[in-house]
Amino acid sequence: MIMPGTQPTLKVLVFGASLRSDSLNVRLARLASRVAELAGATVDFASMEEFDVPSYDGDEEKAQDFPKGAEELRRRLIENDAFIISSPEYNASMPGLLKNVVDWTSRFRPQPFDGKHGLLMSASPSMVGGNRGLWSLRVPFEHLGARIYPDMFSLAQAHKALVGERITDAALQARFETNIQAFLSLAEAAKHYACMKRAWVEFLGEPPSSEADRVDPVPV
Ligand SMILES: Cc1cc2nc3c(=O)[nH]c(=O)nc-3n(C[C@H](O)[C@H](O)[C@H](O)COP(=O)(O)O)c2cc1C
Image 1 (cartoon, rainbow, N blue to C red):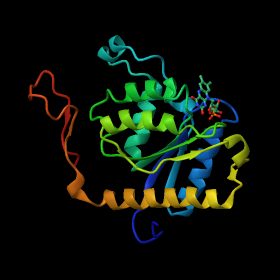
Image 2 (tube, helix red, strand yellow; image 1 turned 45 degrees about the horizontal axis):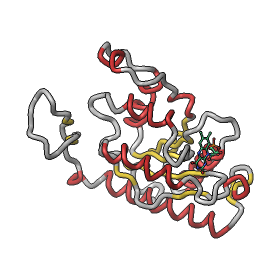
Image 3 (tube, protein in one colour; image 1 turned 135 degrees about the vertical axis):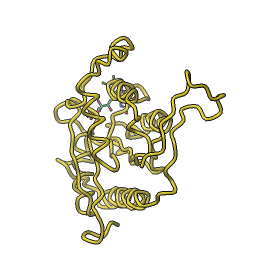
Image 4 (cartoon, rainbow, N blue to C red; image 1 turned 45 degrees about the vertical axis):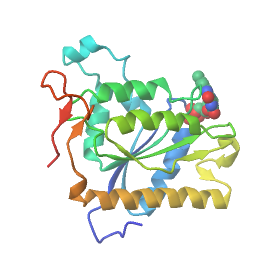
């Protein structure tokens, strides 16, 4: 648990990766925001509309024509210490709209996901709560150097489990809160653990070459 008042507050970007009104994932993200605030974090709540982008196009990137949604996600990642995303599962994987904006945003240098601590959660009407989607979502984030928290909360039968922005089962709500608090504690500790800082090298075992390397220096 972060101790409010004893140190600078951890800043956390939180959003649900769905454009749908009455999205279960947006509702879960709002609940996560409240828990994070109670734990002493400063929450920057975003909506997926703010990160809306056209399909990735390498020609536009070459022309330095980055879409506003990707600029916005980059800005919010830089401004915050950590992120929490509640993402739907589509066809046993992550939603295309989220992967697309991650792809765009990953093209900025310095690469803004590197070193950020992330917590993934999902909500779905299904019995597995969208958990398969989170396993697929871990991959690009970890590839990009984000520190994705091992425990991922997937709310099964979310259309029944969530009433408004509340988990009705008290034991489940307690687990949800503990997971967020544990994540925030780790992110807070890591923020002050300078030894963890290192350069991001996309392919560590590749023979170094100035043309092909995608390397970000150690942040200062
Ligand atoms: C294209 C598509 C694929 C889906 N595939 C899955 C799936 O694989 N597993 C699952 O649990 N739910 C799946 N669903 C149902 C979503 O979990 C459900 O629509 C959920 O409410 C979406 O999240 P939201 O409420 O935050 O928008 C799918 C929905 C769509 C539109």
